[in-house]
Image (tube, rainbow, N blue to C red; front, side, top):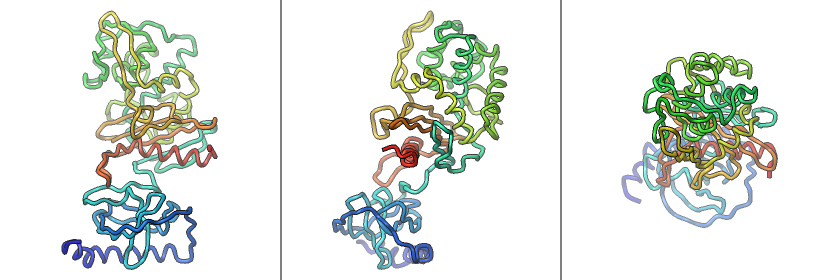
Length: 381
């Protein structure tokens, strides 16, 4: 270990650690930890804490002792068989998850005991009971998670016999003018005078988050976007949503457009009652047939939880992503395991560089954490 690091350990860093350990003693005195069985392989090294690194008395997330700031040098004495580093702090043995320490500074620790987002929620899909929540009533910007309400109202209109999935719809110039061109995410973009059916428009909304398609559907259902927005707010009230106000059908950033994790969970749970909704959000890709003004379009889902990769979760049916500068990363999902279902909501998640150098998209990683919490609570094996 070089002299600079030694000086940090013996100076400011040691003071910080001493204060933290004093807190640990106060919090854990008389408490008995019950970690699962594990073995320790000796390993000698020094690493740095990621920001908000969680420190445990045992290699078990139920034994949280304290949280350290980032960039503190930590002496490692071993590696456990269940993914933790055994560490030595002021002569006392503690444990840190492998995602909490790094060989470099300036990283963020992966949290085990809380959800890294402005707000989070997991609920029982069958009953609506909240299993875990974090700031679920905080007023936040929902971004494109708004589109679940838009899809819900379209599906209700179908169930009432007013329209059908194969109903042809002419894209109007007013629908396109209602949101900026950068709000279109299908390629080619929708064109005035183009004819598409309701199913294709719903797929563009839910799979590729196309804002123009939201306005086209809003005009079809309610005659105008303004009338449709009024229906959105009426439906929110009927569902029991609180502190919620929609001003457009897409979630494109706008003043006075807000809701919270709890209200979004009610909307998602209601939408999941429609098999068409479940089918659409589960699609990894879909081809929208050629129209009078466009070649066929292939859309890939924006939800990484249903796509092959680091975030894939086999129990996730699907959901809806969202992002803007004001909202950060958002995600609503539905998952089912052993016949038991969950609704999850994440609002205000970041994209962070983690201790292993990977870029973590926390709307997906934290949703997977919520799903694990939810199924454990429901007893899904």
